[in-house]
Image (cartoon, rainbow, N blue to C red; front, side, top):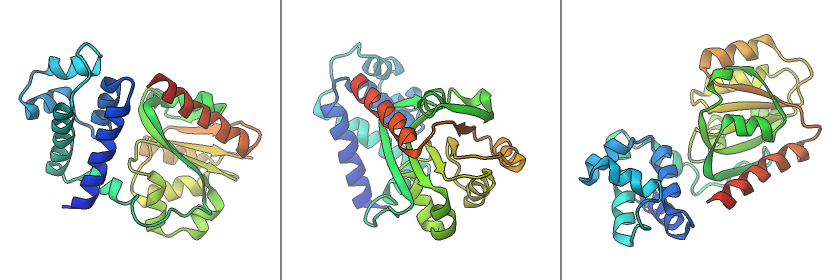
Length: 243
């Protein structure tokens, strides 16, 4: 199933771990992206959970090539057993170009951040689901809401998610917030958080939809799109320094 995509994803994961200054943190990031517990991974590899914990916590020496290979194979095999959702999501980012007219910026974090970090980066105000701000996310997409909603097909809209839905979708040129939240609800895939920029008067329906979908909703108070993107890129740089 999706052999070329599996190979590309395997190379990406292995490469990040090998080149990382903290391989354990990178291993943990990828394990969490795949939604696999330490216990499940340990059982597959035939080791104790403490071994996985020690690698991720830096208490064991950096993993060798053989260990990294087994780790990557385990992630992919477990994902396939579950239906291959992560592999399929990654495959959607390959081949075709992203609709760049709509996408203003799209990045992945070197290490996962929390929604609280996003709130700070975009000078945000949380208007729905404040209790979910500790959720971890792995990237963000900044999109021109008018072009995304009026011009993009359903297939193109899904590409806004990059290779994981555990990311922030950030809509600019927003007036009330109703259309972006309706689009999120209709498409079926839910981002980890939605950020609205340019809101003049927030629509109550947008808040209700966010609450129903359990998606934290944030209103950014940065003055410009450039300031918004600068704040997010600084957060990316911060995770790269910490890696």
